[in-house]
Length: 77
Image (cartoon, rainbow, N blue to C red; front, side, top):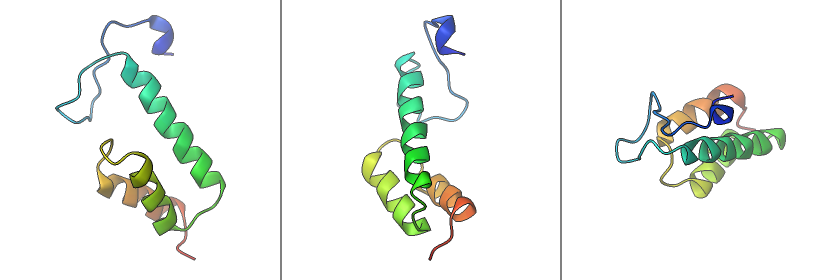
């Protein structure tokens, strides 16, 4: 929905302060969420999901947030 408004800037509520407010962040965030959904659909272990997301996005996110998501969404079997 935000993308359809063709914004000049997109200011995230929680972000790395070194990142700009470019509309390209919408596409990057969508790609991140699509990759996370694809990985989750394969039902990986917590550690498998965590490791793969950090491999795909080493500079993108707070590693603790990825671990919290993995802990809540997956078992570690």
